[in-house]
Every structure is written in C-alpha cells, then in structure tokens.
Amino acid sequence: MIPLIHDFDGEVVLVFGGGAVGARKARRFGHEARVLVVSPTFADADFDGSELVRAAPAPDDVPSWLAAADPALVVAATDDETLNAAIERHAHEAGVLVNRADRAGDRDRGSVVVPATVEDGPVGVAVTTGGTSPAVSRHLRRELEPVIGGAGLVATVVSELRGELKEREPEADTRREAVRTVAANPDVWAAARAGDEERVREVAERVVAAALDGGWSWNGEKRKR
Image (cartoon, rainbow, N blue to C red):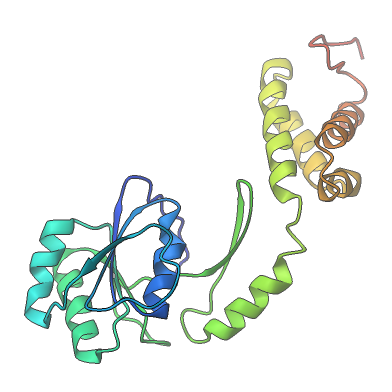
C-alpha cells in the first residue's frame, strides 16, 4: 500500500455504523468533509456534527445509498460482517474508495486504510501499519507528538521566506539551500517549540542571511557581496 493525501473539502464521506468506531471515523473526517452516518441506533459518542440518518439498510440497499450520497469515501463500520462485506463490494463496483473498519491485515484492491495522524498547523504526519496493527500506529502517533511540536510555525515561516527569496535571489539552487538550512536549524525549532513566532522569524532571517554570505538585508534590498 502507498500512502496518499486526499483533500476531502466539499466531499461526502458516508459512514455505515453508529457505534464507537463509526463515531471515531466521523470525527476523523468531520473537520473537512460532509459526513453522513447511517445506522439504526447511535452510541452516546461525539459524532462531530455529522448528519445522523436513522436507518437499517440491508445488503441489497447499499447501491441506492451510494447513488443518493455520491460519496468520495465509504466507511463500513457496522457490527454485521455480511453487511460490511456488501458495502465493500458495492463500493468497489461503483468505483468508490472504501474503508472497512472491521478488517485488519490484507486488504482488497481499492481499499483504504485511515492512518493515525499527528498534526500541527499545516504539518501532518501519518503513521500506518497497513491495517495490521492499529495499536502500534496509535503508539507511534503518541511518540511523534512532541517531535513535531512547533512544526506548523516553522513551516509557515519557511514558506514566507521562500516566497521572499523568489523575488530576491535568481538562483534556484541558492534559494533551496538557504531554505533547507533554515528548516534544519535547531535554534529555529527551539523558538518554534516555545511558541515565539517573532523569534522564529528573527532567527530564520539571520540563518538565511548567513547562508547567503550576508548578501541580503531584510528591508527588501540586496547588499553588495
């Protein structure tokens, strides 16, 4: 399996199953997609504002639900293995991505594994075992949380500097090397983990200036080397 990033903004995610697993899946996609959760009953859990549809579809009813919702992703999270298998089969036939929550290990062609993720602003790190061991993925996610602390701030500042350098430094290789130097600088990361955006910017500008042999001033003018 090859991990990919998918933009679900404006898309529909259709979740079959209103238990704890269905609620967790709904929360995972609810910040970006429109999530519909179909189930005869719903657990006392946080569905993150998802649309809850009280219904008990049979396996033969799945195609009509897919046609009506037109989802980008279907999640089979019921406690009925036969129904989950039908959801998976009909999703494949309709050419829709499917995540079967009751199955670990080997996946059918076209199946999706939802990874454990750690996020800090625009930075996201995904961990997956291909569905073989979600517990290991969750453990690694916890281990990674302190590692990426401040990464969102660093990424934002580096992106801004990269844009400025495009206007000031004509040589692409020089720009890339300066940006990479900032991204790897421990002082930049220390300031970011302290949450000091002004300090991150200050240190990053100093690092860039040093990387370019002092050739830049940050009032927008180039100094003679």
